[in-house]
Length: 237
Image 1: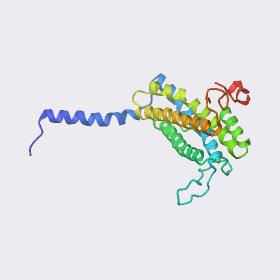
Image 2: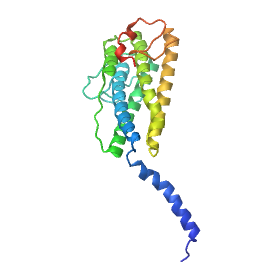
Image 3: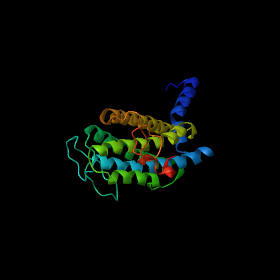
Image 4: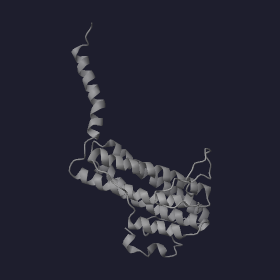
């Protein structure tokens, strides 16, 4: 039986190490400040996304059973402990955006909870904070129709914007070995910005609101603002 030269064996060992080490490291918790940041971020992003589920349900409606055909009339999966609702949005484009966000943010919640379990041995149940509750209430009380479309885009754009800062921080504050988390946070940043850009374009095209900014209040601001976005200063930041 022929044996590999010693140099080949060493090279093979190094190559195996390259592929095995990251997966082993990824199961370890963060170190020092990175651990504190990750636990706080993962809990908060799960909470944040949970409120978006109800917002998107109100826009696209909820289905308790699925039609085998993929159709623009399809709704979302209802959040536990929430009543099923009919779609309030009238724009098919907007309902599509809502369905996509509902599916994506469900998966992102599951991923955040998995990271908490794998790295920190934590079981966590997401909850909706006061700002999320207030934003949901705005949409729940709004009548269905075009005005709902406008309000939904303002509220969801503001909601998305609030995830940008912590997710940007995540890219430079997460544990160095947690490459999956860094990619997760990068994906959230790019996804939220793209959605905000899409909704700003729809607001301009469909409602002649061409200077919308998602920076303050519960639903952002624009020059045609009715003043309601500024009423709750405690929730602006």
